[in-house]
Image 1: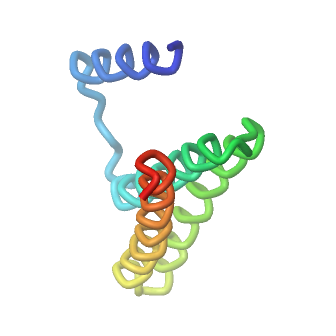
Image 2: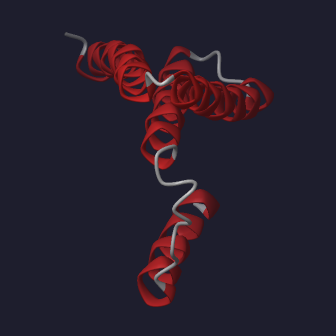
Length: 110
């Protein structure tokens, strides 16, 4: 319940404050969001499987975001930022859909 309340408060504050993302960080934000979603779907799957560990979730969440941002940063420095960004999104998207399918099978027994 605390997490849901925190989410609601965060959304409301974000709507009223309208934070600005610095231009330097803009290319990395979508990748970070997709990486964070991968960690959240993985945590939900682990919770439904009965093997959720909060320490693993925090480490997974942070490491996914940092590694994805580093890959995109490296791609920008090498001049292939768009290709590596696409690759990161594809890989994380496959993981998200895999976890979503496992969650669906667990919830609907199908």
